[in-house]
Figure (tube, rainbow, N blue to C red):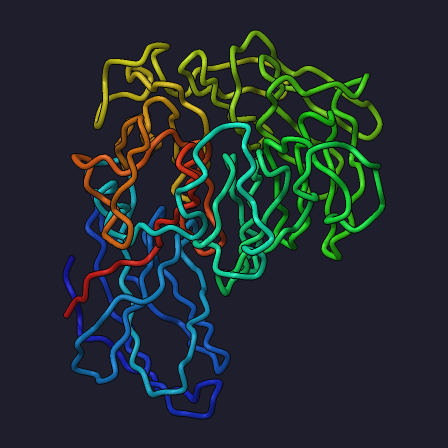
Length: 446
């Protein structure tokens, strides 16, 4: 990259102080001439807008207390279009800002740019003490206290709403837990005693769940629970009232180790995994098996075009399933060996692959169970190792930079998701942690 002398815009901030905005103009190196990243506006509310970003790319705000620096990294934002915005928080002091943009194409440099946009690995819930299966470690003493003090009970997925709450399907405590933006933990649904005591509508904390193994969260905080041993998908609305969305089997029996769940915002379509089957539900048509013949499905998500991405732990494959039921291999070679970092995804052994998640770059995150690894699959079909690990409760790296594939840091993951700020949420079930990789660079720059 080359830098031009940045133009300066003086604006009055939302708290009445004068804010100096420095827009760092970055020339994008590409196969042809490309326009430079340019800041267009910076509002009194702190909304910063730009244009001419590399796509796909990552735009980073840099902050300094003086025009001469030293500059530190602030917020990141994925660029899926050439123009974008983000809101810059204010601490009431005069600050100077500039922006930098990097591309994230499906190349080695693109992967390096992605890795360098992320920073610390840290636990946000769990203390690592709840390791035995079928045992509930929940105590009422945890309620309302820091989530990192609580023992989790084989959590299976963590997913955030737009307000920054993180919801956890804590299977063996028969509950959905919520980590608030201030880091405290709260029971969101379930009584912590497995069973069934009614459909509702009733307060979600008065109705029993029975081994909830999956969930889906809408941006507004509506939570859908895969209540496996009650054979139901339950809804918890934004007022904390639980009702049944649908009965997931005709006789109300167990969901056959169901895990994945996705519900469209208008509730006109849902998908869930039931062991060997990928099933759908609509209010008018009821239940339908979209695809079958799997061994042990994990979590899922549905792309904008309608394709369903699922992982089959038993077969060591990630699949793309079209709406007509056609199944295509997305990643994995069907074994636990071969390929690896920098190789084709379909030539790589993904031991017990369990959870997929889309990236704004067009690529995918893939988390394996027995393999204990977090991968990034780029749009060229090449797979890259983000986090390494091993079985037998490997857990390390908390509070440090996340990326060092030579050091095992995770053990037997269940799911990976992304929150609305771009942070990655990893459910390390057997060790009883929810961990986050911050979408923020950690090294200062001049």
